[in-house]
Image 1 (cartoon, rainbow, N blue to C red):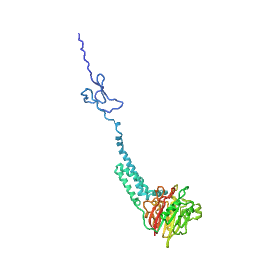
Image 2: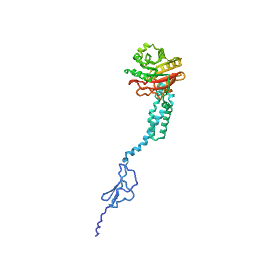
Image 3: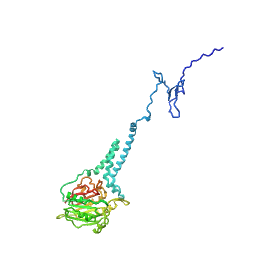
Image 4: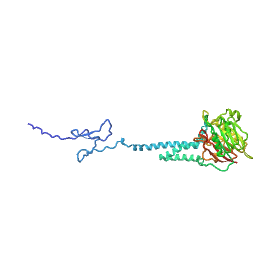
Length: 414
């Protein structure tokens, strides 16, 4: 009879859930194979390699390798470093756009068509292109981009070439034959000009002639406010003149229509800013020395449907014609011109056809900004001469808290 089979001892048998396979890219839908013992004890999970499994010499168990840092574990500092090159490129691009625009304006503003007066507006604030340059230059240095730094330095060099000599110029000094002080004393509809302060300033500065503009109201009151020592004075329309020297007859002229104005009617109905005129008078400085003075207040430039400063431009053309027709060899044009020296519109007034020169350009320091009084950004007031030599030109501190313009002073010599 066949003998019974001998019992077989059971021993743990290692098995795998699948045979080894080449490495492949895993996905969330296909989990990696796991390695188990016969009693379903988990040895390892994840990709199975063809090599032997390392065991711990002490416990005999498998060695668990440390898991490398995941991409999410990157520190914030490393992430910021990774994004910084892109930020530098963006800053460099922005600074280059700003500098190239400024460079184009500095080099080509003379060729921009003065459509609706906007070319004149750009010319007026041309010196203030330095403001974005002050920010663009350090920003370009921060980017460490050579091309950005080069463009910003080139733009700064062009600006310095245009305005550096003016900015570095100091006011002149020396003996003079005539000192003239001028101010637009308009203080708005509700403001009252500080005539007492102006009179005190004239005495302190030793001015020979004081020319005030913008007095559309109480002109006679301003005339009576002349300080001691100014024996000669006149008041016509919006102009008041105080003088140490004898004054000749005066005649106001409406530059908008280029016609004389009847002073009585003008004083009663005129308003500053709409008149756009001048007051012509003579001054007998000494025996044989007479000066013709044009006290000027041109219309205030403003943006309108007609453009920028259109009325001012028309009055300025009439002023140029009057100066060209003036026969006096000694001429002073003083007051609120409402046109900046960088404005192309002033070119005909300072051209060879008139013979006028700016006292500020010849003997003044810096830009000589006069408006607004609290923080001047443009020079609208000036003293222009023909036949007299400018010795000095300065801008004085504002008189009173409500004044729109700062006073100016010029020393002239025959």
